[in-house]
Length: 378
Ligand SMILES: Cc1cc2nc3c(=O)[nH]c(=O)nc-3n(C[C@H](O)[C@H](O)[C@H](O)COP(=O)(O)OP(=O)(O)OC[C@H]3O[C@@H](n4cnc5c(N)ncnc54)[C@H](O)[C@@H]3O)c2cc1C
Image (cartoon, rainbow, N blue to C red; front, top):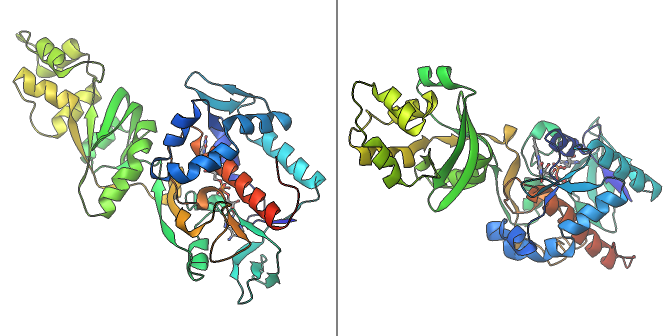
């Protein structure tokens, strides 16, 4: 068995994920976990079920990396790193006789269905494999290796692929220059964001070109899709999600006396300089308490774009499930299986991306083993 990897070393994105502590999966109940995959939940459900979060934790433990559940329910290796797990995994592959060939790029299939593999000098070889598992990633952070170059190579074979779009990424806002200069790097703490029916809560940060942070990432794909459809994409910010508008309006109805509006807002609602500047971005502050409270609860921000694939944490889109059988084998290319972020799913951060990659790898490997009548992975 041979792994072909285009980069000089394997698993660069996995190691990058390790820099943030390697949130490998999540401990919530399985039905809630699977619902996080949204439209892909029906197809990913049985795949996650075949190798669920507990199996992934057991697998890590068997490789010498115990995991633990953080306060948010997210699961991490105790070392908070990817490198010890990767070292152990590579050791196991080597012990099982798996060869890894780096600087070897998959360039599609020959007429006869053989794999075309190019070396660093661009010289191509044809490999007639008994079974192939493609795990070429999405297209985010392309400098780490996965650049979506496989899309055309599979499309010419008639494989249906949903366009690759950035997911879990920052969004771009056309801030006035003086606003960006004054507030770049400033956090907005414990706010809620809403786009249509979808809501997310947490902390975000203002950047020179927009905003970033967990709640932004959670809504970025939906915003990207709205923009791609040519619709306006607006995010509504609730600066005080734990208070009802009526309660805020009551506090704002107190006499202001000689205070400036800014110091009145600072004292009554504990709004920060950034929050007050945001409220002013969409016009002069309303004087009526109800209208002012409404702006605090429902501040519209026009999103002009989502950040590009270069810095997105993941990729939405990919090989459509309709193009695959239940073993994740391509219907148009018997013997070729697909796993990981190449698949057409989108999920929030929280361990769902790596879990889906491991679970789909398990199902694809089991499918390949069945096809070759080998012992199935457990
Ligand atoms: C900054 C960052 C932090 C992240 N943190 C987390 C996290 O904490 N938790 C989480 O669940 N997810 C996280 N992710 C997402 C997670 O890392 C990915 O979902 C996961 O790595 C996808 O695995 P994959 O094997 O499908 O693709 P990849 O990890 O991208 O691997 C694909 C491999 O295929 C190789 N390749 C591509 N094309 C070719 C070709 N033509 N020929 C040969 N080789 C090729 C690439 O070089 C690469 O090594 C993070 C991502 C980023 C960018």
